[in-house]
Amino acid sequence: MLASLARAQGPAFEVATIKLADAGDYLSIDTEGGTARYTHLTLRILIAIATGVDNSRVVGGPSWLDNQHYDVVGKLPAGATKSDIPAMLNKLLQERMKVVVHRESKEQNVLALVVGKGGAKLTRSDDNSGGGGTIMPDGMKVRGATMASLARMLKRPAGMEVVDRTGIEGVYDIEMKWRKDENSDGPAFITALQEQLGLKLEPAHATVDTIVVDSAERVPIEN
Picture 1: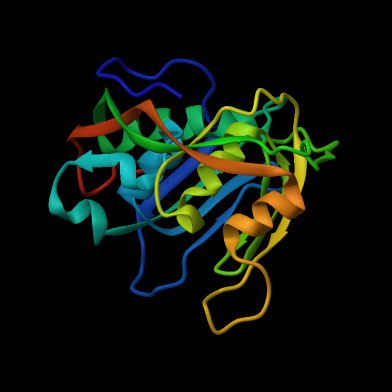
Picture 2: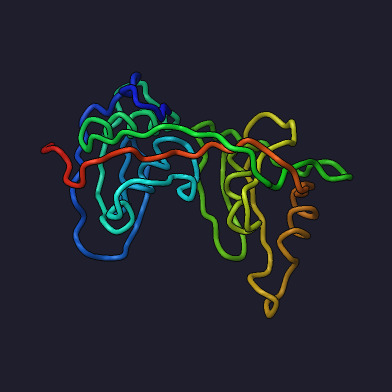
């Protein structure tokens, strides 16, 4: 998952198409069945997926990065796994849309994901495909998640950047439920994290990567 001025190396989709999306508001991501399908995503979100960061950490670039949408379909080559998809998408964006980015790092306030006093309450997963699932306003259900990927998922409910400092390795199936707002039933997010997963968040400082978009072409090169 390279994010630099150099061209991406490594695996490539066997066959891929990328085109301007029709008008609409339906967004979807599907990486099952040996094919990666991204429907009605902006280039900023596609770059975030390709470089492994939250889309809020993809900055710069032309204004259309947030209002022009694209449909992308890529067939994985034999032997490739879901974990190879970001690198293949990165290469596709460089080749078809002339995307050039660079990575910058800066120190900032974050929340650290750590193990709670009573120990972690996690369920080991046999899913090594790179993780997937659903995050809702009142909970999440994901499979095959590392603690680093869980930390990234917690950014939205936590309200700020979360980094993994649990020291826990491996992949886990995660299921959490919390109340959507003050008028809803159930535990608050922080309470749910402690009671259901045995984890907690603490104020911390960390070096966070930002992806800066230097240039890109709005219309993809013909497939």
